[in-house]
Image (cartoon, rainbow, N blue to C red; front, side, top):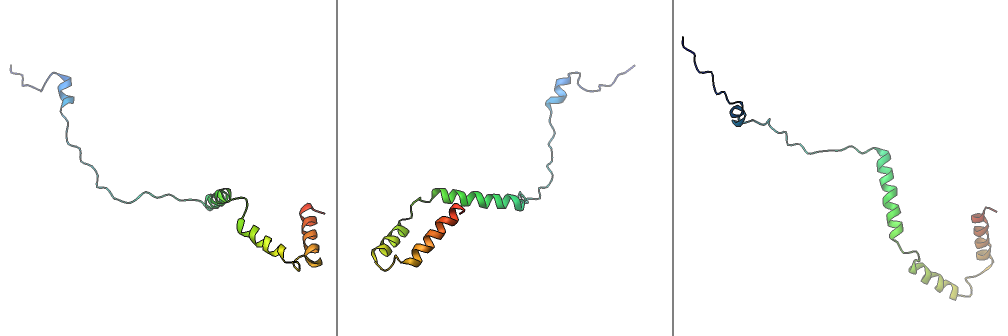
Length: 94
């Protein structure tokens, strides 16, 4: 009786041989994301807040403009005083 050789009896030898793996063809399309309108709005609010935080608290250009106006004696009149008083009352809720 003749027994043909069936292969190696060493199981590790079978795993040592690797076969070439073919990769599927890539479609080469870029990654994309979708941003909800709510997220866009929150992003705009965040960016506006950051810009406001970075801005100086005192606007020197406005300070100089008001200084020049106050030097003119005709600038302060009854209409201006009434407008300022109404603005103060409105801001206080009165």
